[in-house]
Image (cartoon, rainbow, N blue to C red; front, side, top):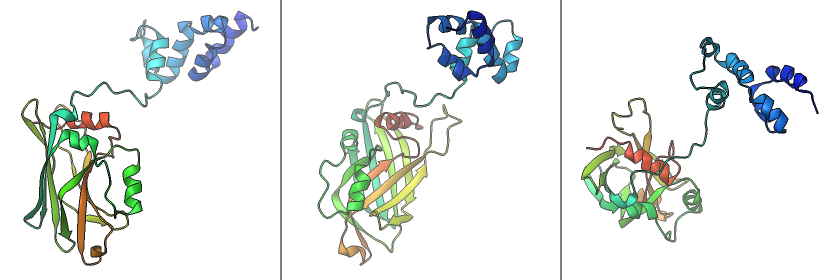
Length: 251
């Protein structure tokens, strides 16, 4: 067992992570390492100006180091204030200026997704839909086709049943990228967020048209069976998606 004098001379020389590890060795080490003098030494390495005060702004230097020395990752989100039960999505798709699909999709349908994928879709698309990142996929009912030689665009609004408010997700964005290898056509737009979040920007909403693995692709026609919405740039869980929708500029 090290003597107390030896520990008191060694502890100020350690890095903060090592000093914290020493607190788990035994009661004697923990008792000595909790002395705020050692943690003042750690804070002096990171924030010398803090030590100019007679007392740290957090009460103790130990608390300050533990709170601010590392970036906190994987924070647990509080429960979302929105639920899919109180949402509905308005989806309109045009080929040139002709409407080819118009759907009012309940939020619960978005949450549930397609229960059984149709036969005749590619294995690549099946693998994509089976990935764990959170996607909202609904069947295109009725199914529709789009010609490859025309400009196809999409608009999507979301409404709240509990407050009669509406927010815009996508406004006439063009499906500029058609990935024939994954059987998806993709369009995106940057979200309009509430002015309460002035420092948050650059978040994209993606809408994908999912089409069948069929011979008529070679004829320049896509047979669309599903519509996908995701925010995979930033939101990969159901809770994150609901919080992101809550941040929209609701009117």
